Length: 246
Image (cartoon, rainbow, N blue to C red; front, top):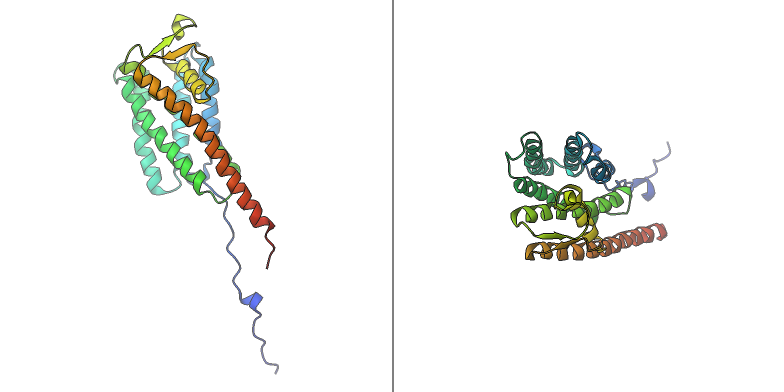
């Protein structure tokens, strides 16, 4: 009988493990759905404020953002629990204020929401910085963080305006919009984040000015750092693809 041949080194060598794509989300609830929820909120807010039951629609859209945010970052049991713990007070406070206005001070509700948004931003940034390659999930997370930054500062402006009346001066617009609430707060926050600064709303108090300055710096630095990170990931990914196989 012929002697059995020893296995070749190529056959004996274990095959390299398959590279899993970067992913964030509980049960594969991706950042794409969360980004869609954010866009719906931002696009819908200026049009639903003055229609019948517009406040109810806005609360539903905010609920969609909060819940989808929990699902998008809850990639592990521990993080999911933390996200729920931080989200529930903001969600309950929002609905209580909708059905029973004045029952809970609004600045308390916005503080709870701000804490949850900061948690979301931290989780998305952690995902972006630890991603091994550039894919659609990384891009969606980067855009989501930018929108969340504007939303977080909007909450902060509302808190300052309620705790320190007269923190903002309005030079144009109808009297109904000369209050740091609703779409006016969104508008001022994103105008400041993008460093456009039309001048129709001016921060007056020291706290409001400090927040506006920090938001303008954050918006500029975030775009620069994000682009640098994505370029570095893409360059490293391209170098690995160009390396000759042994």
